[in-house]
Length: 159
Image 1 (cartoon, rainbow, N blue to C red):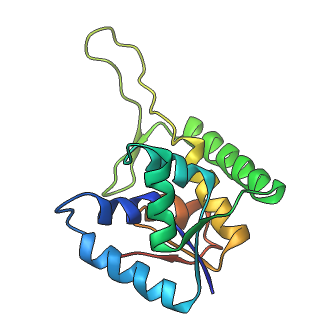
Image 2: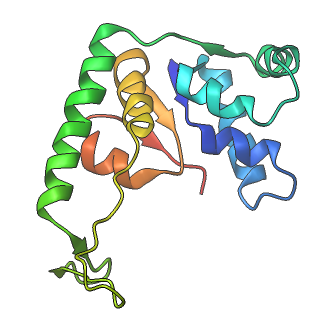
């Protein structure tokens, strides 16, 4: 079994006293015992912020037996096309209530300009598409994007 790992699961174990640290560590250990743990370039780049130099990061990855597997053309295409779908939907649907789903416009109280929401960055879609193409599942706590735009990806959460 090949398991992709999202950055948030790894940060759970790297950041002291992180509430999901123990459950994320157990999840990583369980999936490592079943096969390989892989990371895409985005996850490795996001992890770099936690280490003082390349050697320290490389050592951590070797110790945890997580391997960088580069993206391929198929995963890059999927990431771009699903992000484009997301961007089109977001442009048509300004704001929505997370409880009831009602959509509405919002204006700045000062200048009355119509507010727009920021789009998720493409990185989330690159991570999801990489997992979809290169792995059997992904370990993540970022379920919203994956459930909506990667319903064909098995997502396992540490909670």
